[in-house]
Length: 283
Image 1 (cartoon, one colour):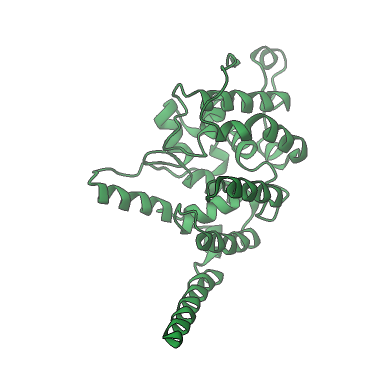
Image 2 (cartoon, helix red, strand yellow):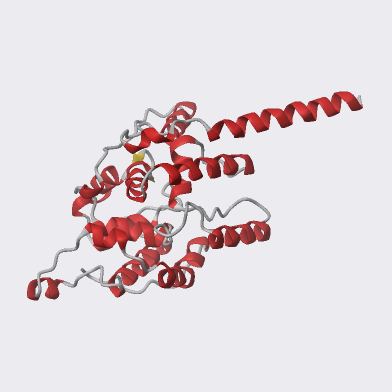
């Protein structure tokens, strides 16, 4: 009986090693340099979920290049999801530590602490499961992606496959669905609202009245305004000024912004009740 048990453990161990180890070689990550990976694993997961539920539903998606996306969207998403994006190698040690502590406190795998690169790996090739095995696979894929493709391509891929609602994938589909315009024409506040729902786009609505979304969007907008990324209307009239996407992408302000995010946004996302909302600034 003991031998059977030992052999069973050995077989399970070998299976896990092979199952995890294959991600060091497949899929072929280098193809991401030029190929747009549609549908993603996450899109297929949702489609299968709908079939099991008997729902006749289709994915809404339209691919756009990075230059066709409003710089406000790029910055709002980076501030909200991964403010150290340009400086890390795919992993945020501080974020992972905070997530680990929260999981220990909650007694479950609830907080992820994932970077945009990790989220991209999950959305492209894996499932939304939070189990440790999936996280190991995600880490392997993240390492390979960071070593193979550029940061600009990573953010382009992420914005094009991220889920923004039930069946709504990619920033272009989200912009058209919620604001009836293309992604390149989104305003700073619209970008902030879209970035605010990324923790759980099935529950949160960027154009709804949920206090947690409105409050986070307000915070994101204020941070963007403080950094000079949003130009008030009167300044645009008096001193016309173009926002160059290259300048925004290469800006290095991760230290100060990380503190802002921790103090002003992070805890509020996890809470179910929020204090009264301050008036949203007008653009």
